[in-house]
Length: 218
Ligand code: SIN
Ligand code: FE2
Image (cartoon, rainbow, N blue to C red; front, top):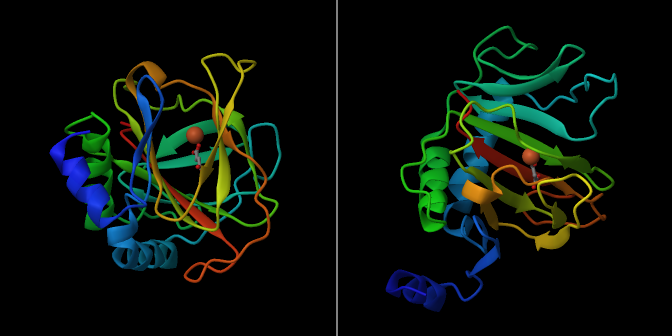
């Protein structure tokens, strides 16, 4: 542990770095100091681009509610998964990336060893009890040298972190409000997902969990 970590962990004993594998780490409580600004920024984005349930290429309605900020937004429909600068619901550009998003994503990536990360896409996922995200790889991005930064807010969830093959064993990582997971390098294409959420309550977000996934998509 370096001096900065010792200092940080002394102030926030709940903040620890937990390696998951080569290239991936959980930064416990990393987003907590920015909590209020983050929640305000999320409200501003979803006022312009409300959460919606996208349809998978196979015709299923996703249980996770989704929105985006940034120059590119992740979308799914019968034609496939892709990044699009336009919100298909409004016909307008996605809301721009709030400054606090950029700063948080950049500093979390740097803390995990990926300096210079500048995301152009933030997918905002809203989970309710019973909502899940099935096992998948993030592979719609152009450059797999860029890491992924995932910020958990609200009620807890269990993150599944697997290997490079769908059938590889997965570890179960409990994630709570303010935890950040970063994966890149040799871990960039690992399968991952979220188990169905259990009913719970969070003071700021009620019965929901909001996850911000930052990527360099274009
Ligand atoms: C994702 O894989 O896109 C999101 C994961 C999460 O909600 O923790
Ligand atoms: Fe993902």
